[in-house]
Image 1 (cartoon, rainbow, N blue to C red):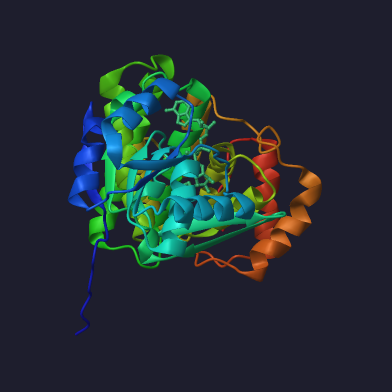
Image 2: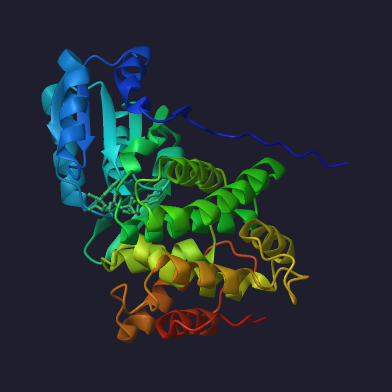
Length: 363
Ligand code: NAD
């Protein structure tokens, strides 16, 4: 008899409208006395409020944020943490702000209280990432997993439709790939399916009515669960491909949204059980031809059209002339994936994502 062992690694979570008021409570609970605030300035008023509630706990601020965390920015922020004698980092913003805080945590072992404002899910993972030149490096380190995540749906009210759509598809991508991960547990599978269901039903309302608090709450709850699924499994072709493309400076959410249906189509025949769960969560299990869940990639594509995500990877900034270079980089470090990753297959996924057509299942 074999024994399966499962552990769910998760930060402490505070969830609900107005929960940002709990930031000082969490800082105190973790013993923070000299806080470095890594804050994305997209909503200056909210940051002023945060500064006020932190009061004398606030020792310094880092306000420069960039996607994929350029190495120079990380170094400067670690130096700032040292200069002010920080003992805790509060991050406020999307995955880029969380990612910068994580690099400080990685270098100096400081705890993080994360206040996410997008659906990226980084606050739930021990994954750090940084970029230099045209290469992005990522790794896992338990030290960078935030100690607390504070989810306040009010912070996502008014998020532009474009960001809502691509960030939401980014979250769905975490949940989808966790479902066919080699280390998926029954617990994570339930979380992932619920994450997709929650996001897919809430995102259209969020895009149509950006101030709908009920829909924003459902979408953020889905993003939380999707992040948890990402943090507790090993990602496959889709995430690795988006990672390589991110190294070329392409925008994270847009790239995820443009690649997802095609990477999933590549894997569909090799991961029928996962496809059934994705199809069920997207509400297409009962449609003709959906018996084996193969409609999942088309349903993801359809959701992207409904939300208005970029139709083609080119619209997300990809230059098709880079296809061979991207393929070679991916194959230099191939991901764990239900279907073996081969050069022709990767090129086909990129070509299909450039075309933007309804994904075809391959085997
Ligand atoms: P982002 O953090 O770069 O934010 C995108 C833009 O949206 C920025 O201009 C920001 O100012 C703005 N913004 C943020 N919240 C907003 C809101 N509520 N309303 C309006 N504007 C808002 O984008 P992202 O997609 O959240 O994060 C992408 C980064 O996160 C990438 O670098 C990616 O690699 C990383 N990431 C890491 C993990 C992980 O587990 N380590 C997971 C997901 C993403």
